[in-house]
Amino acid sequence: QSFAMHLPRLPRDRYQGHAFVHWSMTMENRAAGWLTPGFHEIFRTHLAHVTSERQLICPVYCLMPDHLHLLWLGLAPRCDQTLAIRQLRRGLNDELKPLRFQKQPYDHVLREAERLFFFRPGCVCINWLQ
Image 1 (tube, rainbow, N blue to C red):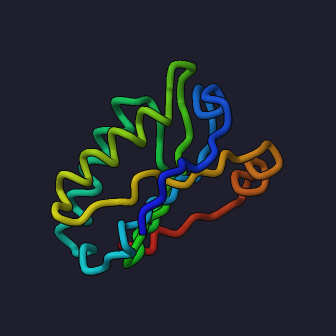
Image 2 (image 1 turned 120 degrees about the vertical axis):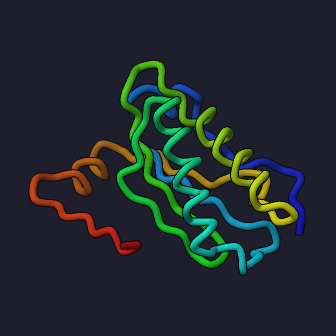
C-alpha cells in the first residue's frame, strides 16, 4: 500500500544539534528475508560512516525481521539528523535492491524527561547482537 502523504515532522531545528531521536524504518510491504548476518555487517559499515560523517552516535539499534530501530544522539551544533537518516536510507536501499525501506522513516524526538530516564547514572544497555 502506498501513501501520498508524508508523516508530520517537527520543525527542522528539533533534529539538529544535540537532539536525541528514535528512528524507525520499515521495509516496504513489510518485506522479510533481508536480515542476514551479511546484511548486518553491511548495515554496521553504513552506520559507522554516516555517524562519523554527520557527527552523531548510535548507542543502541535493533534490527527486526521487517523493520529497524535506531537511537541517535547529535554530538555537535552542526549535526543534522534529517540529512543523516536520508544518507543511511539511500545507502541501505542500494544494498537491499530490489527490496527497500518505506518512503519515510518514523521518528520520535526525545523530550528532556525521556532523555533523563534513559540516560541516567547506572543505566545499563545490553548489546543483544553479540
